[in-house]
Length: 183
Image 1 (tube, rainbow, N blue to C red):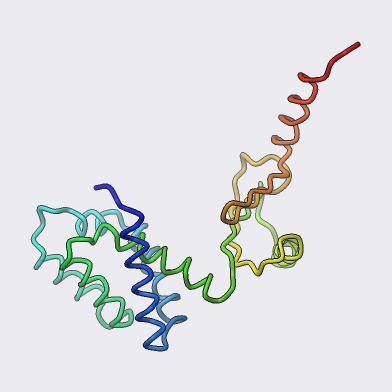
Image 2 (image 1 turned 90 degrees about the vertical axis):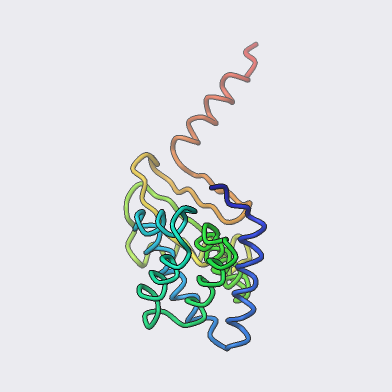
């Protein structure tokens, strides 16, 4: 089923407003991340909740059993509302939008930093501090390891891409050499 990003943005913003009004932004943010991970890692649960042929009562019962008492009632009621409105396929994207809006509310920008091998905590902190100084932003960084990244760092935050990987540098060198006129 196709997910409309505008619907996810609307529900994510509504969840942010409700959490702010209740004074539980951080709690919903933390529990939302747990739910996102749980649903992404449990394909059977996600398919069950998103399958139109499964009766809503069965889905409601499952949501109540699995989530009630484990996460804040606001998140349970949010899932039930999306179920009632037949928008459950937007649940995870709406939670992701909520997380993005929460970071913005705190003045933070999401960033993904990819390296060829895991970095120790001190190196991660130094890299984040350098990028924050360079960009003038406060960052909420997520580190990722990708062995295909040969040397250097691949940094993404919003529309900003900083690619200092060896492969990119080699491609740039090749491009310059191919466009160099020899006299």
